[in-house]
Image (cartoon, rainbow, N blue to C red; front, side, top):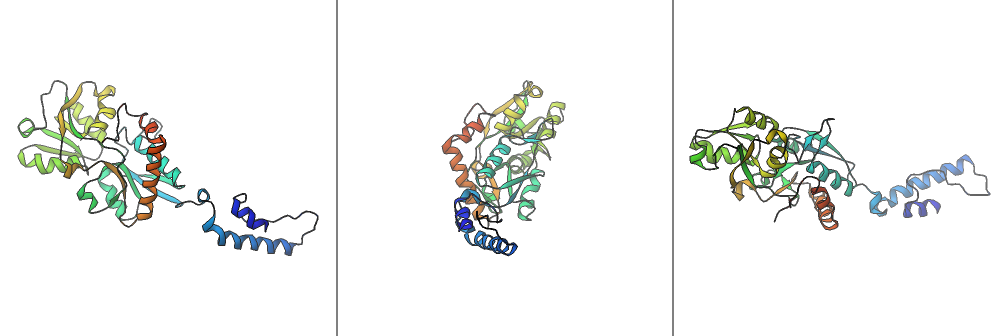
Length: 291
């Protein structure tokens, strides 16, 4: 009976000897009680309080840590950023231990489909093309795509302005897809990189004429940093809902419905209780969630 009460109210978490005062217990008595507790533990585990039951023991999250302020590494080599904070909070709320697996962006979807990782958290846009391969959580935030150019440059996101120019893009991004489909056939050279940091390095060295990425990453991760003081946005946002999608989400395998539902529920709670806004204010001075 003590085993039963303890297991139901959560005061004990593993089988062990039951001590009854004023009575000497034999080894056989304790052995029988231990087996009783063990049986009750497995029998009652489905009805234990939810906070005592992990959703899933471990989840491996793939990320490309070259895209500040969403995912990057600090001076100590630790993963930091808005995506990283969101992922940690989501894992906490679904009572799961999460580990991060670093991969180039263009390798994340193949790794997910090959079950080398269980989820993608890497500023991944929710697009029609990607939804043919993987599933997504609800939208986590949104950002338009824009060019970054030198302050003395007159480059605009038009065919006439970009013709003959070199534009840097991150491999596997919607910006790369847009550039290859709409600009490359018109005489604009699209240069693909495996890391966003490499794009900015070549931009500041003059090896490319413009960088094309989402405006939030460009603003917070480059333009507002000392290295980006001589650069600006080149013209307005580039719009194409079919290619750029309807926001950014966490990528999942199509058959992982249980995980998607759990993450969506946890994210809705974060939005409702103010946790999302609190995390966002660490990185942005505007509404990154968008309309």
